Length: 366
Image 1 (cartoon, rainbow, N blue to C red):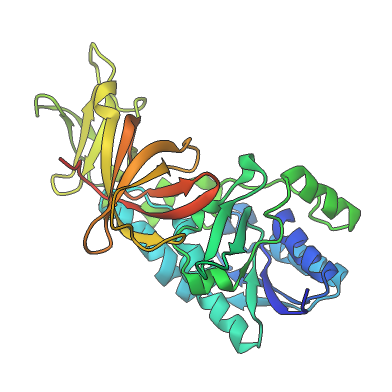
Image 2: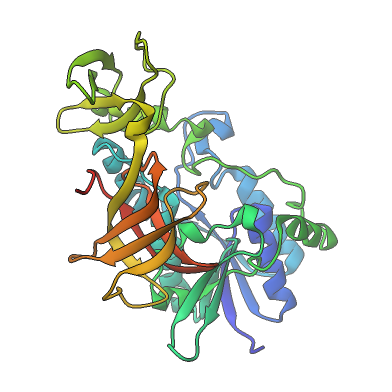
């Protein structure tokens, strides 16, 4: 394997630590980088101040790992671009009654966007992360292909579907062929301080995983109370506490006294209304998505059979997709799917290969 200069995004966690270590073992010229995406100020409690991202503790862990591996390490201030590329969109989506996936934007615009641009300025050929996914190159088509990881329980390929061919060519996922247990075992073998560090499941820039509190501080106006509307009758049957307080499929916490269980089936920002209905109203056979990106092929000219995944913990379901104009795609499932949520990603698979994906739109196609 040819020696390459590779910049590794180091979060201070075990996955990115082992990613850097494996590249060092392979003989590459490795540079460790942590992106500071959130301001270092305010609350004395670091967990409340930073969430799980770029806290002094995480930075110190990443620095210790870099020192152990004998690689240079840098802390980059990317607050402004992260705010512009990720946080502003996160807030805008909730304001519009959608539920975004900020990791998708971060991967496309920050890790394999601005960081890759910097890496190339340092004569590096690639950016590596601790993502659980795999990349191969198909000699026949000339395409770089994205695949699920070897560990199905940790797979993160659904957060990487927007990456372009140029970005995939310059992406490295050194732990994608390993299980989580193997990653921790490698970290222990190498004596890394992150070997047994707990992993975080929260949004990295949201303290205590309280995204509603974060949104309220960012834009209190989006929590304007409004009507809870019955989907069947159109009648107002209650009052909500602001659209971001609710998610599609939610049943508890609605404050409704009804004889039948009701669920949130839509968030309507035009009326500032939460629409509720029965469990059957959550079932949806088709959806449309925009911002479509196809990795394994060009946008299909004919209907294409795939397995489509509508959220991270969703089991991909058999479906047929059809490319539409303006970067949109229609997805028709063989069986109705529950709680299709605007703003979430829909990702298309052929086995373990990522065909592509898009962002679920509001509205139910006819």
